[in-house]
Amino acid sequence: MIQLKIFTSACLLFISGLSYGQNEIKYQISFPNAVHHEAEIKIEIPQVPAGPITFRMSRSSPGRYATHEFGKNVYNVKAFNASGQTIKVTQVEGDVYRVNDHGGSAVITYTLFGNLIDGTYLGIDQTHAHINMPAALMWVKGMEDRKVILQFNDLEKYGWKVATQLSAVNTNTFSAANLQYLMDSPTELSNFKLSTWDDVNPDKTRQTIRVSVHSKDSQQIVEKFGKMVKRVVEEAKAVYTELPKFDFGTYTFLQDINAENDGDGMEHRNSTVIVETSPQLEGNEEDLLSTFSHEFFHAWNVERIRPKTLEPFNFEHANMSNELWFAEGFTQYYGELILKRAGYRSLDSYCNTLGNLANSVLNAPGATAFSAPQMSRYAVFADAGVAVDPTNSVNIFTSYYFYGATIALALDLRLRTEFNSSLDRYLQEVWKAHGKTEIPYTILDLQNVLAKTTNKAFADDFFSRYINGIEKNDYAKLLLKAGLVLRRASPEKASLGRLRLVSANGKVRLGMNTLIGSAAYQAGMDDGDFLLKINNDELKTPADLTTLLEKYKPGEEVELTFEHRNNLNTAKVKLQANNAFEVLPIEKTSVKLTPTMEKLRAAWLDSQIKK
Ligand SMILES: [Zn+2]
Image (cartoon, rainbow, N blue to C red; front, side, top):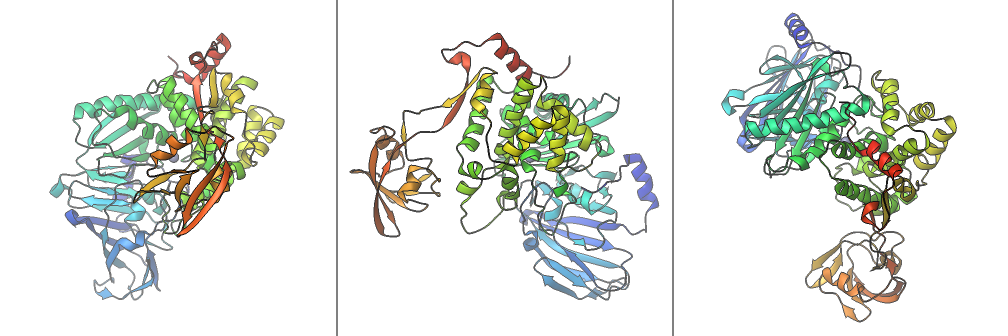
């Protein structure tokens, strides 16, 4: 993100009053046809230099790492010159338009359609307008540094209020210092309910946290949930010892809860969009906290501790980053850890989380073959990227969320056991060097901060083997120090490897590529093939596979019969042992928890809030 000017809201009112008639760009958003998911957009552009101007829809959105074609939902594009006369609009690309003969100022209008409620797109109906700016607003090339005024019309008609990180000029008008900040400012227009509180930082700065909830819940339920979010915010603050200094002194959670939604969470500089698929808040509070925990951690890690590769946002093309294993992966690790520390997850539930992490990295062909930075770069395709052709992602990709979280887990336990330190303390140093200062970092910068927290030899070794390389730390050994056992859950069970099976007209069909190294892969079976028989036993439903494999032991040879595009094949393969991992507290095995283990576990997993 580029440097943003920070005003107090009083100061901004004053400035915007003065600036009337200057070169700021004004957007008006109206909703004459909300029920059919349409908005009308009007953009007033003063002081247009002579010559053509080019304006366009974005192809990427802050926090989403793949490209998205927002231009497809724009139509009726019109333009008017300084005298209010219609001028010709030329569409030069699918999402790029040009006008000439503007006479020094221009007005552009268009109709916008949006019917997807998530952290990237636009959703309009009579209950709300859930706006992610890149999905909604065209912008003028070469005018990215101009101040922007945004006016929302028809609020009274629908009974809507405005929840946003944008600075308020009045109840329906807001401002952004430039295009970068505008696009980073999702806005929810609805009859939401609000829970707010003030936080005081160690330097005595008072800031306001707002949770706006658009759902069918009562104010009382929203207030109760706000108290739970507050606890999560405080536990996150304890990691860094202070909250970031939010622009305009506020941070806003924009939560939308409806069974029709697409579940999502998207962090921004002073706000987060949280879209939940639950029918309501009540009864789902603890589950819903996980998105809050993850996204609020981003207020430090990614919004201010920011990789150079994401700077500034490129709205015409997705930024590719080497560092998402840190920006997303370490955030993933802390999102879960903070819920445990805050008392919203039991030890057993946290052990399940750790077991899932182990499975998604130690058993994943992508993580076996490729480094965490390389998996981060694949985000330009993987992060909700849309394509019609299949990929080999099960074999060449491992989520940088889990990959990075697993690296964070190893580093945390190694810092605790080898340096009497912790990942919290390392992050405090990263915060001081790159977050508070907002000096964007590279992987080498992270390595240098680790060298300061530990020593150069350790940092060089850790980064070259486990981050830039593909080696894995010894997780069983590290977890055992905290009295947690990492082991194979059912090594006695025979397996063909992890498969996705679907029913297809009384037959069993493979629903994804087979995994490199698995018996199914070695047999030559793949996505779309029908698995017909194991030895002489036929499969009719996906559940038959489990039943049939129970007849065998790992290491036994079987003959598989399968069909590929009407071709019948057979292959003899050796069955493997089920390789799924589990993590459990040592006291649930026959071994005792020692006081040393207990002490480490408590220092790591218990609340860090200083009483
Ligand atoms: Zn994230």
